[in-house]
Image 1 (cartoon, rainbow, N blue to C red):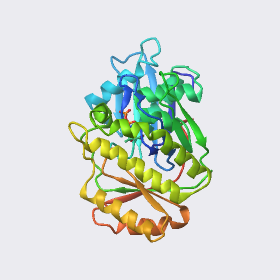
Image 2 (spheres, rainbow, N blue to C red; image 1 turned 180 degrees about the horizontal axis):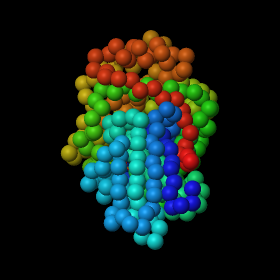
Image 3 (cartoon, protein in one colour; image 1 turned 60 degrees about the vertical axis):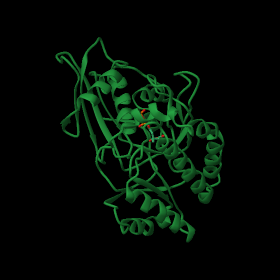
Image 4 (tube, rainbow, N blue to C red; image 1 turned 90 degrees about the vertical axis):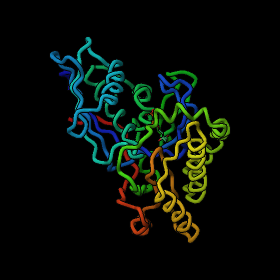
Length: 322
Ligand code: DP6
């Protein structure tokens, strides 16, 4: 499209090595490298139109006007793209619950970065797009790409970019997202990142990240599910340990979160290929293999406190649609 408008679709991602804490909060330069899988089936579709007659950006999310907080964050982000100081009309729709640890900021800012940069007539490389998306939401840098994606912490903004490490069809892992609470989380990631440094455990988590990241890369390379399970649960537990020992402490888990974590461990001890990983919310991502998917899904559905299970595969990166 060349009429100062564009529509893009992007998917959320689930981090296997988590990003928690920023070295530069304004630019969202992360404290550590992270690695995620881009999810298929879950999508945010965003249209950006730069228009001459708007007094401010007009933003609707799932048909509702954006909250003041979201409006301010998105306006700030759009300043990177504005065409001759025009304001934009933005319509964004997601087909999954927003703000509940299903990473809507990742798909949202990745789709917005692609739609806004295209509408503004910028022709960015995927790497440049990931740098810009990162300034909207750190994890959004990773949703620019499909498959398994690494976000480099980098030394400055340009070197803090994402890149694909394995394509989406490399290993058809399945993510069963157990929803235990679909509401918006009380403390968003942005505030949480700012607290990470107050935990005495954060420096140890960061120092050990390169070793965990190498273990994940090796497990992916050799399709070693058991090795992947061990290191991903460790990484998730380390991030939640940092959250829980920050000042003030953040406890994102609900009782049902722990029920599912324990059940997943039990299933795996009995030989089922499944592990958990949890973002900044109470919902639990249960990663498994296609052949076990329906079995694991019904086991999770039966656990007390599970309201719903969303299912995703490994998907593609952000792309434009007509
Ligand atoms: C726990 O990317 O949501 O999901 O940059 O403030 O939008 P902002 O944070 P965000 O943080 C992601 C935190 C996480 C872990 C991860 O996805 O790596």
